[in-house]
Image (tube, rainbow, N blue to C red):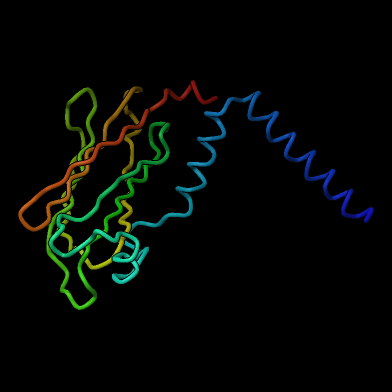
Length: 177
């Protein structure tokens, strides 16, 4: 019993220290650390999250006729220094059955600074049955101007296209010291 009480006390002390450091350094610093950790776990390329049958169960209203695919994007980290990379994660779910063939399409990525396109990428892609993530890493140039940037992701699938936007901020080097 004494050991359990000691472990509870230790756990309480660690949690108290984490909460105190969050308050002192601000929630933004904790969020930035969390996003860098998430980014470190990701690799470029595609990964299946759910198979076709599981996707159909997860999205009950999903049918092959309810195209285009479900689609979302995420950029991490939200704050970055020049010369580092952002991770752009695209997640899509198609309602195709496992027996259906994949569908050819495209993924377009554009980075904007003050409404000017500064980076473009176009990938021919086969959208497969199920739920998939596609991770890409985009290097922020060493001479990038501090400020807000927008990443526009477009998927072109069958006869339609879908667009999502995310933002990130490039910080001046001296801001992070």
